[in-house]
Length: 89
Image (cartoon, rainbow, N blue to C red):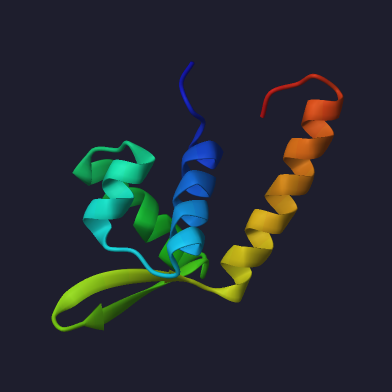
């Protein structure tokens, strides 16, 4: 079964949140995406204010914002509700 756009976005957010910050390559592997799709999804998350891009020793890293953490919490509520009714998200 293919993942929805929402599922991919939440996978990326959860990974970054778990790690504290993450390099693009690690996000690519963790979310199982092509480079192009990863860039597209990271762009969406940055545009919405869920993550920020930082630079450390000329290396790009992504960090989750409070808004991103809040989104994860709300998404978990939706997953729980959906699961209670036997419906996939």
